[in-house]
Image 1 (cartoon, helix red, strand yellow):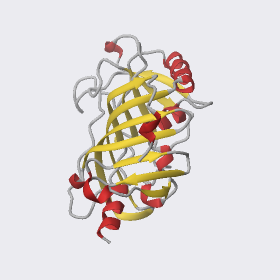
Image 2 (cartoon, rainbow, N blue to C red; image 1 turned 90 degrees about the horizontal axis):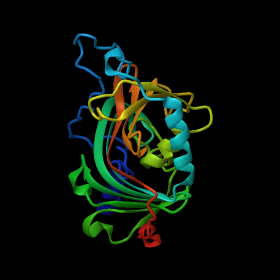
Image 3 (cartoon, helix red, strand yellow; image 1 turned 180 degrees about the horizontal axis):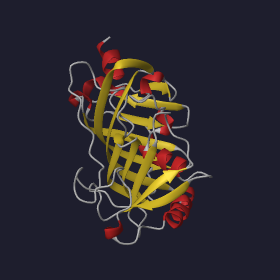
Length: 265
């Protein structure tokens, strides 16, 4: 019984590089990082985060970046990522709840084409879950191993399991960095250069439209890239002017070739 309870906590703590089903009862929500380009009320502050500021010089060519990143996603054999993620929403285990639930995590992820994934939780709003590991061998099948002694036996699961849904009700298979990049570069996407934001002031920032949003309340999505290496630096999903899902990429290595043993538990 204890192992099952811990496993459920693991699945709701954001093991797959995202904040999952929300915070556990009794924990305090953490505010999401601000994505405003300048402090509210400052001279020249835009009404919407990411709005162009003429004084910041030429904006990045969004469509050129889209073309380059689309080709990179399609041809890379793998990526090696370390990411900090945070989210807030009104869902828990796939069901809507009145309480606003917030969570955050720091994870290491190895992705290999066409769709293998290994993710390890390095930090979490649930401290006992640090060290937990998840491996996805196909879009439908995965294994989860809790940290410590309770992780001696990996548990098989379906990736559609509602316990893997985030606190915004996003599916697990939509919610890792490569899945986001595939969605944001899909046919019909349009990228527009916007002013840089403080979380990655030297990056090229784009606002993305024409893509499938992961929930109906999201109105904007912003992505920051190194314009030379195409390495993602940060990402934000927003409801109006409020960021509700954020990613900060501490490391993003394109063209990694993962050892096949990395996808075994």
